[in-house]
Length: 224
Image (cartoon, rainbow, N blue to C red):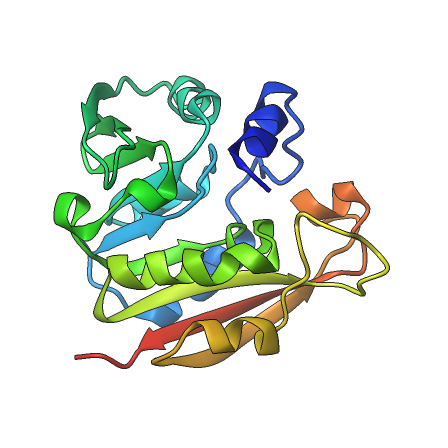
């Protein structure tokens, strides 16, 4: 699965993964992280998620990463925000477009071009639909990138999706706790709760995933 796949999804507006409202699981379980206001939050593969607006309203500083310029532009346009745009150097030869308004920054480009030397490290990472968007072969590299951007002792709020393999081939992919646990060496994992997707649910249910389960985890880095 390469960048062209996701660019085509946005070009064709095949974005059923986008939720029009703030994710209720985020609102329900975010307080379990017990973060201080002003904490730095990173949202990988953020799309145009309105979850970012909710996090900003809670008093956090937020950086999102998104491959598609269409998604980034749509986020600012739909929310009537006027960002300052610039280009920053990424790791390797991949530049990143930086779109910034106050305490919100979206980095448009390759997630793997982001590094802590240029963007700093984060207190918490919020992953709603990033890990489950990636095939198994890409997950370890993705997790390694997240860990490199997370402060020692930092946390990850991870929302996964579980469904019988015969129901859907992904993306989004079904990712069990036993699938992702080996990827997060040095983390403790707490299952905070789950919710069955019904016809009243947002997002994935519209893609034929009725009966699937979203599961919320708090991952705590053991480093000091």
